Image (tube, rainbow, N blue to C red; front, side):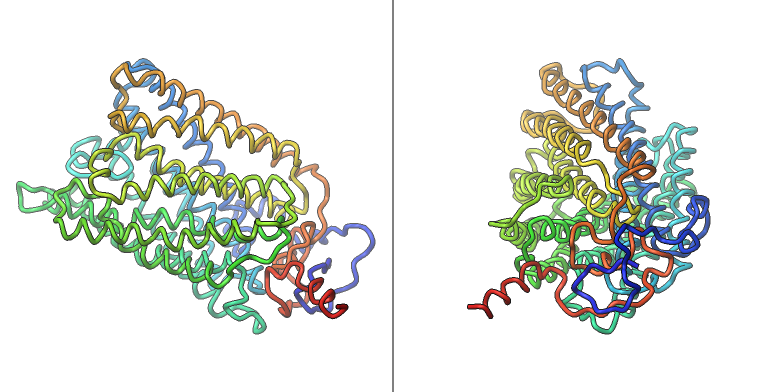
Length: 554
């Protein structure tokens, strides 16, 4: 077993001069990835591969919509099909791409490795959590037989109760399965991190990715049940004629909005917190510096998790919200920017005067930093009630949350893949293709989503297939940007498939990183380690040994 990480003390067999492959009897076969397997690494790969498949599905829906929006008239897809694509694009991208890939994929693969555990606390529950997702995806696909859910990914009643009701019920069933999977996985992460760390790893020496997963798991455990309740009540209204959301029978549609947004705004942090953890792993490695403000970053994740549960009503400023409630949620929305700013400041301080290696992983991390800052600034503007009332349900909102979620989450996923691909496969990705992928993605993102802010400020509403001709020029610009984004995945997918099969072999720790996942083989054997590691230093103590040596010499 290859041991190159000075952070641990262990007694593995000495490494040979050449890169040694893990014996085949200690590795899973290709067909194991299609089975109910309880190994956390295999489950992590299942989540990641599934996520990237649905990235293609959700992306194809986006391209169809942008092609329709290239002109003001409905000349590419039928308006009802456009509504179905709109609804399911958001659903697929959030619930079958970003969340499963970041938490289910990276979380499952690396959390046990980062804390010195051989597996998750509840392996069978972990496998069951994954296998709830394919049936959910199947339900979404079947819903198109009935026209597809067409009420937007928010599915506000009464529109969701009267438009394609059969498809809407299938959509609700899919989300309930995905939510159940999320609850199972979150419980598993919290127990695993709390109970299964090696004795030499205290909480404040864990990698920051672990802290981000803790914060995300808390959000999922608290926020998912109210969403599930809201969706069940919607199903009762559709199937059984109840009146939870029917004002003429004593119900209220605003109740659904509260139940939906109590989960769905914290879901933004559910998506970006794991990505923040990826950033905290990538930046110190390629800057060769200790992370600036480790404790502040760790606690800021928990602060985002806590404050993020008290901001949901800013989505409802136009729903007859009481003035005192508007004021409270304006303040809470502004407050959540503070712990986020702590992270941004810490990452920039870590980069400052670092010996930066601009690998593909680092490029995507720096790209995320710029994208998320811009998306965060536009988010702060939406906390102000007068401005929010002006741009509500306009394309300004679309541009804002795509900078946060695509420029944030997707860039972070790419950074994580380029960083951890050698660990997961034992092979390197091609750096030239990686840099081409970054350039196309970076410019494609700006070209697609930056003009949307101007569209929104000019008055173009979102969720429509037909619009005033005055908006055509900017919409065409957005469409060409979307085409560039679509093309950007070609070098990436080719790079991943080719490198996984024939890429250059990697050593156990090619980046000279200090976190525990790099102390075992690449890819790790089924048991993770022959000898469990013993932690002796911090996860980001780059350069400290050299500084101590110089101090003693002086």
